[in-house]
Image (tube, rainbow, N blue to C red; front, top):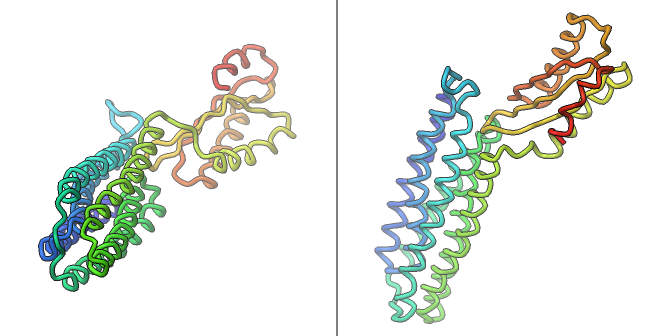
Length: 297
């Protein structure tokens, strides 16, 4: 838990710092584009707070009330982050429309741009750190936060370029138009984050490459007179869950069947770290072993 929550604390500290920096940049320049960038950093702060809490919950050990553990809590963090992104987009549009009708000049452009780029550099460093940690620990919450921060970096660069174009061309309506473009961009980010969370909560199967690796382990056993069916997979946060029915010859001893099942489970766990594997032994000759096969197709 410590190794994960420390990254959430890093994200939280970065969110506070960038929100302040971008807020100052927006205040100094009066730019709505920079203000929209600052609002997205406010979303980062909310997301970091949620991630800090849910990562602590997700790493709790299974108990009587939650025998399968708490790993799915990470999906709630990702879902809240997606919702906050969409709310930020609405706030940006609501602020931009009046300024589109009555454009305002941009002041002290050079100072504002410097501060904004400093905030973007801070976000980039944190995003790359979180992305590496998310992949290393298989954490959807950290990966979602990292991708959001990377999106924020590109948003900042786009805003800076757009504000610079506004100053150079003198077309003041460009500033609120940039803010609206930022809002549209982050809507897509929010929708993507929400979709990933919903699919996880709906127990979607593991990606096809992961399933292929499982089948590659199982197929050679067919040459020894064994078989399998009812293979089911899903993911719960950092945990992969794999279930199957293992069909063995009826004359095989329970000890030998159990040994083979343990061997298969160990190989799957080695191939897909962080997996919980459950096998159910059935006699291959018994028609009753195939009655429930249709349920898992």
